[in-house]
Image 1: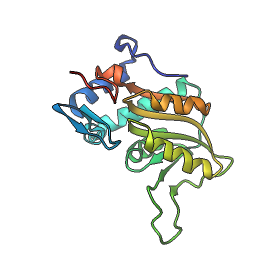
Image 2: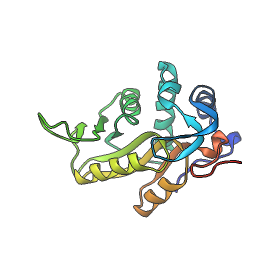
Image 3: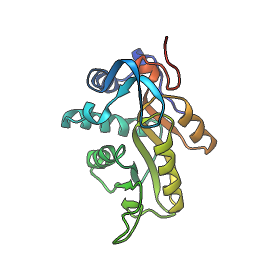
Image 4: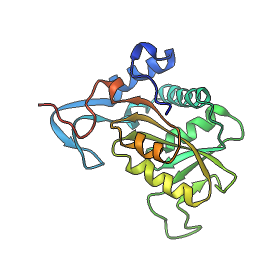
Length: 200
């Protein structure tokens, strides 16, 4: 499994800068636990959409994703995941690469008209090598749903990337499927408790 080191001293210059942005702009800490979209409770909330809303910051995040995939030796044709957590990274990565890579998004439900597809953007098939991406993974529900929908197209999922993983659930999920899982940061990097554990 290619999980990056949790030691900040081992991070590249770009990842160190990106971690600072996530900590300073995206990480909110409350006195009382709040419910996350996963249903779990935590005093720590990560608003990655606001945290990476500036163009330069999003570009840096996408560069880090590209670098992580290259370092892991992952070759792929398309990148995407469940809307809305994946959209900005899917678009940003293919723009950063500026070649024949494609983006896609997985709808939460079919729109009921037109092509009525759940997967929009790149046309995925058995010859497509796919990277799944998400912003924040907690229990892994969103990225798992994306995996299931993409697998139904016949495409091969060659890796999964998330900006921050708040637990150890997705690691096990992808390990069971022999899919390299590459969280850019984990709860260790942010110095917060994994989801499901509340400090006294």
